[in-house]
Image (cartoon, rainbow, N blue to C red; front, side, top):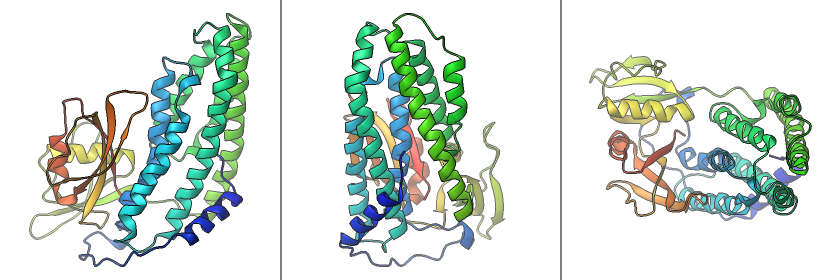
Length: 348
């Protein structure tokens, strides 16, 4: 994603033009230590960031069996801004303005819009022409690009995008794929497209990494949760639950891994019959997204924030659902099966 000071300035100007009526919200005193508390609006504001994981994930699934020429880049741009509008409308009247987060969302949104529009134009013209010369058959470079796209998605679920080894993937593109073969025009066009993409992202990622390390402290990699009781034994592979304290009434303050792993830990805790009392110092609601058939109905006690079609999978939608923190365990236990896939739990 291409980000610049000019984009940040544009985002600041846009933000300054927005009328904001949010007011401070009285919050019940949190049990989590201060360093583990995060603002309640961040469960909503993190959605646009995570869309930039969901979108590459959909792309990686699509290009496994298709040329990227018909991937709906522009549709994803529209979905980013539609979802941000829904999030903005949700937080503006209830929470104080989180200016820095909104600016960051606008910067990544503008940069992603530029990137996706360029890729859409390139694939629509050059990509389709080279695809025609190959008779619609994927080249080995198409396969390599699809494998890198999947590896990249797996990586950014846990680590920042700029930490990804694009330079190593660029070297692999030329070392692991032959210089000549069937449909040579397609092979060389893909080599050009992937070389350009990986080289730009490697260079820009290096700059962003340097700037980020110099300017910001590393965020805590865990989320503090207040649980209804001791969670007991967790499934194999989910061994990073740390008990911080046990309250006189038997409730337990613990930490579990943050980001993508939080969903797996939350799901396992729910299956153990544990209820959530507080997450990252918050006791109101938490945002969850699921992928489900068009006719799926949001469970009682929860509230639909917005829905979006999964463009490359007709008949499937993304449902963004507000869930009371005290009912998160019941929600997670209730959505399993029937074609419903838990996509993400946005742990502030």
